[in-house]
Image (cartoon, rainbow over all chains, first blue to last red; front, side):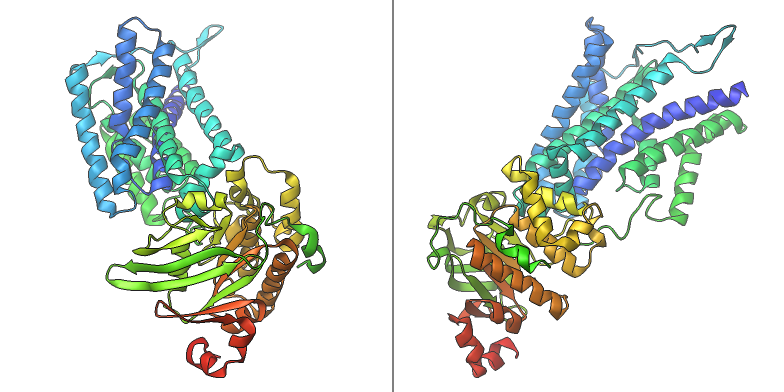
Length: 294
Length: 256
């Protein structure tokens, strides 16, 4: 029983991080119809900025804030300078550009920060809480990861649902031309959207790095799982991204914890789940085929 | 629809100081092209303040391109667009609504994923804070969309969508309203209601309308002035009643 709870909590924690990464992809896809393959590299870059600060003596929290802010700036600048010229053009152009960015940013990280393995700290312990004599499998780090993602998502929901700028961003995402005719400065909204998505992506990078080692390509497995989560949910749906991430996190944790030679099967089971979902619902679990009609 | 509310309901044209009959929107020698194809070929026309001007013509006459060029969605090859004497030919699309021109595009431009209320709010975003009273007035004007306030806009019928986008445009307090085929796909009864309401807004609130329609009979019945467009050129401009009476012209270009 203890073991089951342990595996479940690990799955939930991982799933939260997948959800955050998937959400970053969904935010960009919804607003610009571009799959941002560079999301992982961008997140890695901000994690290395945080690491440099921590190594220079800054606290984890200062480093976290600076990393998230630089994530925002990086996302906004990339949209404005590199993505804008290919927006609305042939889809393949944007794909090639974000793939190019993926490789370029990763190389840049190696040049600036080196390509060796470096340990990344976590602000909380990884030992379970103690209740009397028994140690429960929930650790402070688990709680921190789950809370960080939940708080970020709540803030995003509040922004989109309850603020004027959130409404302008949604209008721009759903219908650029109508939004422009109504006086919404769509270009600015897209830049802002990329910035916010990069913040969420950066958060997932910082969380997955906590307590482990980072190197320029350390995000690669998260990129795979994040994409699978986003597609399971249906690329168009923020709720889908979150549910997709949690489903994937739990499923992979059970595979790794219970199947014989489980850890070797993790990546392949992600693909099996992906194919299974796409066979049953080709648009993803939360796709809406009727909504997108003017 | 609430005909009895209409007269006092919306203070459209709030900032209009332009006297009725003066040229509010002037299009001079406008040429627009998609590649080698000229959709507009030297079009000149004007929309007067406090009047409904209907641009008529068959599919492909250039009606939609005309509106899209006026609001900046299509950049002209040559020619100018003046709004109240100010050259807006090169102004950004986003700035048009602030200058007093609201364009309801082809296919109505409902944002399907947002609720009815959110659609209205997007229409007033550029003005900053807008009092609840103005939204209530739009809902008074269109009780049918008031009932569906919190529903996603994609659940609305065609007529309700048309009411929503007109209400949304009115929240921008425009001096001139550009409407692209509002009658398309609507039952004749609904078309009559919507045109009747436009007439009321124009007569009582001093709103000006530039209407593009394939449904020439309905459009001429509500318009003051008609402009007939054929293959990107203006064929004739005259009062709506004169055009209505010209049987040869109606047969040749208007299909009725």
